[in-house]
Each structure stands twice: as C-alpha cells, then as structure tokens.
Length: 239
Image (cartoon, rainbow, N blue to C red; front, top):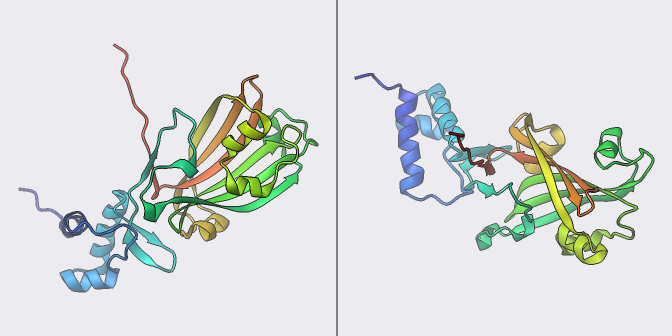
C-alpha cells in the first residue's frame, strides 16, 4: 500500500472536522500555529493541508482575518438573465448592494465600441459592490448610454434592480445578451473592496445586453472572486 503524505492525512482530518461538525460558514477556522500544535506536525505540512481545503472551497483566507470556513458557493444559471438582488438566500446572507459610483462620463474607446457609440457620446458609469449578508462578494462596473436613459438617478438604482428600472421607466425590452469569462487576479482596489489579498484568483465577466431592436444597451464588467461563486456549464457529446 502506498504511504500517504502527512499533509493528505491532515487534510482528511480537517475536512471531516468541517463536514461532520457542520461548522457554520463564515466562522473562524484554526490558524497554522494552532493546527501545527494540535496535530504535532510542521507548519509546511499544515500549509499544504490548508491548500487542499482551499482548492475544495471549504475554507478561505481573508486579509487581516486568517482562515475561515467558506461560504457555500453561489451558483448562477448563466444561460438566463439573472438579478443579484433576487437571489434566493438564507436570511443571514440576504443580498444587498452598495452604489460606490454613479456618474455621467465619456467612455474609453473599448466601452464605446461595445455600446456602438461615438467616443464623445456620454455614458452612465455605475460601480456597485454586491454583498451577501455583510460580506462583499462581487464588484461590478456598468456602462449605459446616457442618451438612451435620460434623467436616470442614483437613488433609483438603490431601490430597484437595473433591469426592472429600465423596463418600467424606459419601457426597455431585453432580447438577449452575451457573456465572456476569463481568469484574472484581484488588483489592489478590488482587494480592498472585497476584503481579499492582492493577486487572489477571480473571474472577470464581461456582459453585453441587447434590446428588442438588437441595440446594445448595457456593458458590465464583473469581478467575481473564485471563493464565492461556482460556475457550472452542462456539456453534451454529439453522437
């Protein structure tokens, strides 16, 4: 029988500790020093074991906090439009949104191209921090053609979902959209907003939404830390 390395044995013990005791999410986990003392192993063995648990999304490490039992990842169905504010979550993880920035500005060349605008045509730039309970989990930058949505107000976005607001105030009808995913790393500003370490893995999601006349009306860039969200895509095989 192949002898298992010490870190793997320790990882199994820690996994069972979390799952069998049903330790609540977002609660403090052991420190490296505590685990090394408790199981009489080296700190390098502990770090290797904790890395295994991080890969399984059972624990996560937050800046200035240490390890904690991670959230059960939220799963989105990206085949359909969704509303963060309408996520079905337990009461202690109710979704909320903070509007960090709401301004009218001139877009950069890339954003103008995405929205089929001349570069001197103004857009609304909206930056939102999405939270589950009191934990920030997503950072979004949204761009909307200002001419399409005159007199859009910041407080309206606080009280309503974006799509509901555009549908009721401007009679917008959404036809479809497309999202592009790519791997990235958390930058300094995102780390501060999301309480993560600089360089933590994340997904960047670019969404372009179209109205019933096939005109792009929304371009959003979302930073989604890998520890909070799971993305599943069904695969089929042609026979």
